[in-house]
Length: 56
Image 1: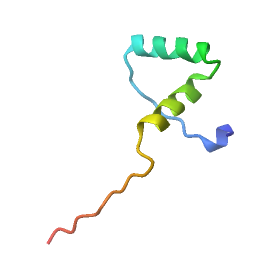
Image 2: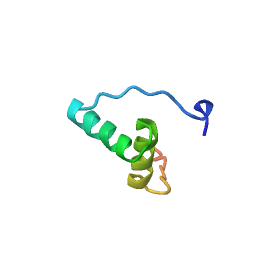
Image 3: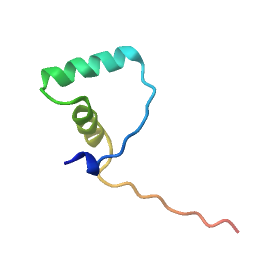
């Protein structure tokens, strides 16, 4: 995946969590971006269905 396949986002995360995530990324020899993507993929359902409700 190239950087053109990615979207930049801004998040506000507890600094101790960021520190822990950076350390884990180093241990796994991953970038922080790749680690976060890996965790989100594992956490999120395979498919999300959003149904539109009609208001009468």
